[in-house]
Length: 239
Picture 1 (cartoon, rainbow, N blue to C red):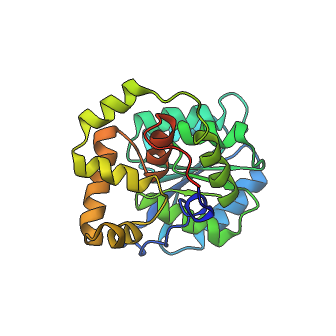
Picture 2: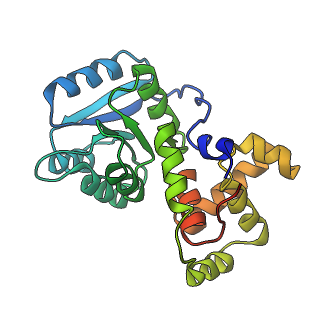
């Protein structure tokens, strides 16, 4: 697998600012961290604070009673941790995106959070502009993962020892030949524009095909599509 392939999944261009403010919920058991994130959200004209929570249970109550577009989710919290809360929120509220924030860049936190449905994974020491860009990116339906985590994530799933022929057969039966090709293109980690140039299609057409792939396979974003392609053995490590 090339360095470019490993590093580009989360490196998406920042989407255009939406006319309707993005409603953001902040979930962290540390009041100081919530305060810092609140100030960051309130400083942006296209973001709006939807509420705050100190643990997973409060987060669930918040998203069940208010419209929340994006959740900034701490992963280590008492009572109900961020991974469990992420899984519940993404299952109950498919329109809500989660950006996981943690102090630790460790596999024990990153991989479960992504598999639970998080569309973003960043360290808490990320710059404010990086977190703001991540909010806008996941709200636009894309994914963003810290580059070091992305590299290790792909290295991890690319070394899965036994391909799952049953899941591969299901994928092939679910997708059209063109959509299957698009899933393989997604596994390169390239952007829609890069894929469009390679397969000689318009970027809009590629975007449409990508949307169909994600919808048919029940995937939230491109990172989950890449993980699925590697975990099932549909694609393997590349030099």
